[in-house]
Image (tube, rainbow, N blue to C red; front, side, top):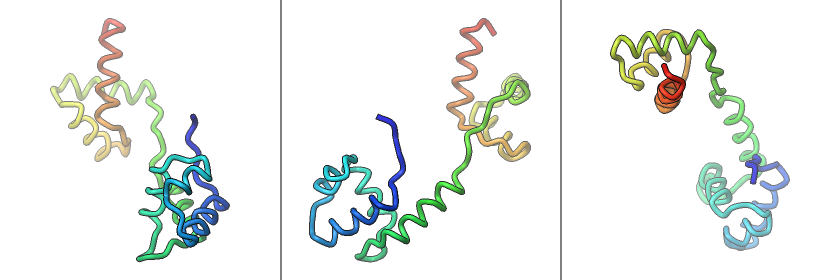
Length: 123
């Protein structure tokens, strides 16, 4: 099942059902969503005791806008990774170096996968 963001309409439905006293599980079933999705939504966007769907939707849009975008691993990025690994830097150190000096945000697990893939291909 593909992940989709909550819509503004769904947020208003969450608000109405919550005000009516329904459980998070019931709300999740009503919206055909996971109970953990509803739980996270309420935890993230609930101010003190109340849930405001309009404010929650705006916060959700802001989070989506400012989220880090996936980095395309170009041949140039691969060259940087290989050079740094050959200099005996760990994947964690490589990730930190690329972030600090090149503005490239990669998770160290991505670097481990690239190393493994390179070994499989005979590198």
